[in-house]
Image 1 (cartoon, helix red, strand yellow):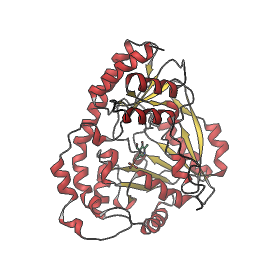
Image 2: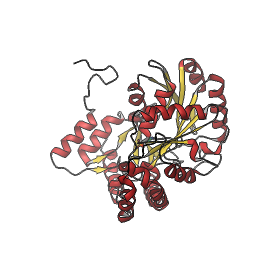
Image 3: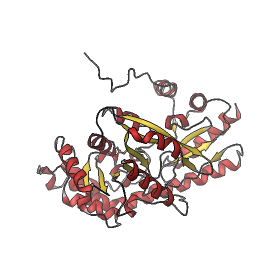
Image 4: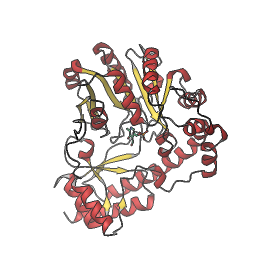
Length: 387
Ligand SMILES: Cc1ncc(COP(=O)(O)O)c(C=O)c1O
């Protein structure tokens, strides 16, 4: 059987996954400081209301519409505010699917998209599975992460789109207002579409004063802008499988018509997710408040821990669910993470999982249950002390 070259040649697990597999086989407990599944973090979900929303009588009717139901799009437009209109939106089954639809819309096989790093690691494969190459563009850490515009400039001629995550995962950094202007002008001049993943935009933690809170603030960007979000973060409900794309800027209406054609081939958004969306978005502020409270509690614990470990530091968390911890890079981050797991049963992500530009970074999930987070930090103290 021929195997498509879009797939990885082999799927050998990395050393950290192997170590985790061993721990689980041996039945040893793991303090997981990488958890990103909000349904496994001890939040209080109003279960009866969620079940009722997902199982109402309307879910028994199949009323396919490739853009998604108007009622769901109205609720989503209302959630975003800033003059967002239901006609700006198309529903998908997830943010990952939104990327797949957008790469189909914007790229021919062999085309390139530009992906600033460090960032969300799925880009490479989401692009490859559409026959598209994701070209990394570095951002360098000075007093904040600065995108390398010279690298962006030289990669642009062969690319169709630039993908930004605002605020970024895992750096937590929001774009600044100045960067927004510069990026949209750059994309307009270079004939690029700008994709802005804002799944974490509703989780501002310690944003800088001049941060750019959401692409919805710009009603008339000079380049085509596609804004991505979904219930997996907005309502802490990844299992419901509802994402969306909003199109703005030149060509937005034509783009939405073309996206509608693509979505029509799949019709992947379930009736339940669409029918439930207004009610779930109504429940979402309470769920987000729980997550933000947890994030703040964990940051507080992390900062207290850092006062006892002055060789370590935390990068600012503009927004989102993760923090980057810097540590002296006496060995590479993966070796340290495997050691931490083996010795202390504490799981963290080494920075290179997110293409951090150097060793000495660990990524911690701030939605980790607080007791687990605190115990994990104690294990981290011992592991650092033993190196
Ligand atoms: C930046 C970013 N975008 C998208 C997603 C995934 O969203 P979805 O579950 O809607 O595919 C994640 C998940 O962690 C993410 O970090």
